[in-house]
Length: 445
Image 1 (spheres, rainbow, N blue to C red):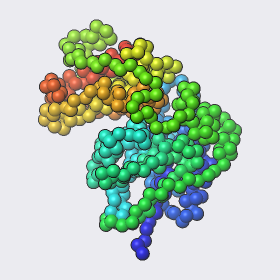
Image 2: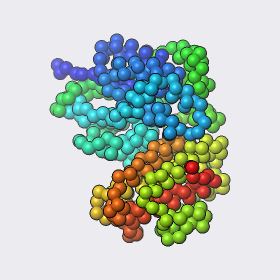
Image 3: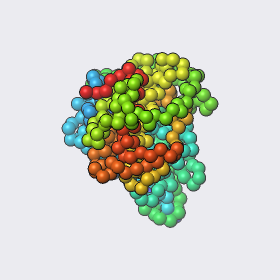
């Protein structure tokens, strides 16, 4: 009989030491010695420091989650958030450095299958892919990106982040979500995954993905949270006892079936009239609405202006009416924020293409279709804030290495309009600045 290796995958412990200890005890009882952790060690729960210590000792592989990226880095926070300060200060300085330095992903081969593990998606720890994704999102999880690096593309991908487990196979590809150890929301019982097969075996062999639920003393964990004075304790109670996502609790929403509506969002909204105007005129004269003179921007100023025009979204998304449209056919602040996040991602990608290729032609991007298909109005404001911050930081940082001759490299829109690296940056900056004006916010600084 073929010897089969076993690896335990855990994810999203979120400072819940009680649940972690119960899961590790079950892993030990099964004789499994190899444990891989898919991120989000800290935040929400009260004992992030202890969780980090245990995982550093017990986990052979550790990758970074979204909370592990922004909790150690106050520059990514909204102003005046005492909860983030508490979770940050509960960690030792060297633990914060360890979390910030964790790798993005881990690749391995088992039973002839190329397996890739990461926290949230193939492009960012802040880009969430839910279990009810579409076909494009499914295939994107198997792609090589700047975050994953090059190499053979995987045939099996495992991730965490959503606290919502599933396993899906299509087109010869398998995508699975480990669920959460410390903050399970599809069911409140902690969950982990066992991969079984022939490790590093290049030939086909038996292979399985097993989901394991482990009961634990949830009341002991909540007592520890209260005794330690952890922030947002009432939200921790709602998640651990009832599986109610804290974003829903904040908005006063009752728990519902977790699949989003297939044909329409939960609250019907009037469609936005598509914007068909050609905005390239903003490169020639100041915008009369927002006042920004895009054509006057110099190369050395691009990166800092991206930062100045995106930082205020943290505060905007904390507004009580961030989800509310001011008029039926006008985007809410949340919808605008989702658009700004996606603009940062898109313009970073187009700039990269212009630097790597001679006069590339960009695929058409319909912002209105993207908003509908991406269900902008249903997304979580705190998640969008983190995703927007990460996308803007990456976008701004990409300009740091552009040399003087490279600013003149060209690319073509699908309609034939030509941009240089500089004019594309100027055009994108107007978009970022104008949408701050749309929601009544001013640039940072």
